[in-house]
Image (cartoon, rainbow, N blue to C red; front, side):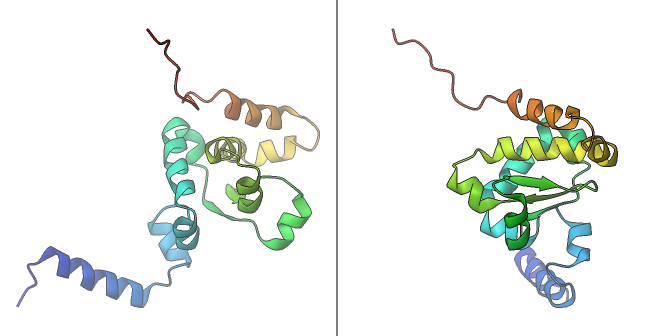
Length: 155
């Protein structure tokens, strides 16, 4: 007898999928978004910000393959950096520093996504030129979306 209730179909599919596919493995990343399940549940504002920045910077978003949180050792090695981007598009965020300094996650993601958009050539160029960092800073500063509401004069 076929199942006609959509809620039951979804729950059966979800149970089978969760039983067969590890949640943090390569298959969910290939089939889903760029954020790990742990990162998405622990920091839902990051997922929302990435969705917004993906609309604003689609060419850079296409080159991001993973967003995660910096590990303990990387946080110690990079100091107070809010994020780090590999030449292959992996963004690691220093969430304790971002939250401590009350940084706008949209600005941090705009900056790191600009680095992801630069790719390997931007990474190599950063060793002898300041241009890749300047472009990333400009993408953060000159975002198309307003950061605050426009204050209208009172009548």
